[in-house]
Image (cartoon, rainbow, N blue to C red; front, side):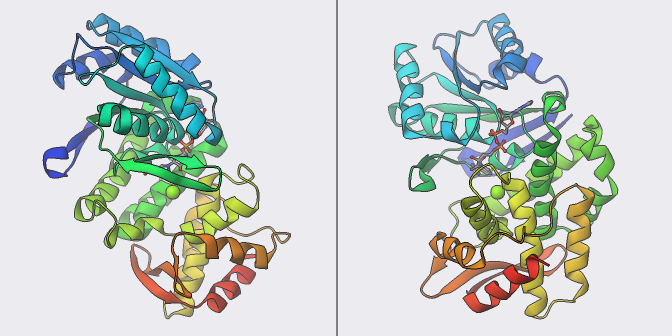
Amino acid sequence: MGTLIVELGDRSYPIHIGQGLLEQAGVYFARHGMSRKSPHLIISDGNTAPLYLNRLTDSLAHSGYKVLSFIVQPGEKSKSLSVYEEVITAAIEGGLDRSSSIVALGGGVVGDLAGFAAASYMRGIRFIQIPTTILAHDSSVGGKVGINHPLAKNMIGAFHQPELVLYDVNTLLTLPPREVSAGLAEMLKHGLIWDADFARWCQEHADSLLALEPEVLEYGLEKGCAIKAKVVSQDERENGLRAILNLGHTIGHAIEAIAGYGTFLHGEAISIGMVGSAMLGVRLGADPSLVEETRSLLQSLRLPVALPRELDTDTLMGAMMHDKKFKEGSITFVVPLSIGQVEIRKDIPASLVREVVEQLKE
Ligand code: NAD
Ligand code: MG
């Protein structure tokens, strides 16, 4: 078991990563001085709750905590204003007060929704994350919480750091294989932006990661969280450095938007986006081997590395221009210089990006 501290001054918090943590949740609650008088509300989704909710509530009840739960439909559509309202209704009806907490048991969807409810209920109560997807190692660090507006993803949100994160790798064993690979895409991304050795470690241990071997997963998640934590502690509110976490995301978000949400999982879309970023890097002077190396790293994790031919370039470019990162005529891009090193460029001409999109279809 490992513990990592996300250093954010008086908002610092620990991420505990290990096996069997769900069953020890009550112990961790006590250690963090959670109130035994006030109720705590667990938010989970329809896939995760039947698998893990009982274990969590049993552990908390055993330690003397009052717990309520609210289950939402699985999937991105639960990050909506209407589901948010339902969560707040559950919190009011359940009598949550300022000493209560909201607990997210699930992937990034539940984490973002529950976190935003915690950030806004009575102007902010404590938030606890119990991530059950690999992708959620990304969302468990950094404090961004929020929901979608029908017109734009993640448009309504806040920064709200959790009190603690309990990452029980045993819960990952039930993830569908595509979700496993998609989550590993973000793990590898942390290597690609910061640490070449870690990127190569991901490839060397790809089979063990895909097979969800606990010790290997623990190391990978800890390392991925640690890199993100380092970036976030230097730039909590995304004034500069934090943008490097968006490697592959400009193209990736556009792919997600135009292919129809759900066709590509987020991790799959950013995998293709990261290959595109490498192509852009080479056009801007990086060693040509960067593209092949990036592809090979991603393919070892069974991720897609090319765009389907039928995706229309104009539509994709249009979607990129709507991205928040598009400002004053040029596109901001995270461009790799080599494996493990990136720079933020604010001056990337759309024509160059168009060439890369075409190249991604080959
Ligand atoms: P998700 O929460 O939808 O989970 C993926 C699927 O796996 C869902 O169907 C879910 O029901 C199921 N699932 C979850 N845990 C399971 C388990 N242990 N066993 C079996 N099935 C399980 O998606 P995600 O990929 O975890 O997260 C994506 C969301 O995270 C997006 O909304 C994205 O915007 C958000 N996100 C937020 C941040 C942040 O910094 N806040 C960072 C990255 C992503
Ligand atoms: Mg992402």
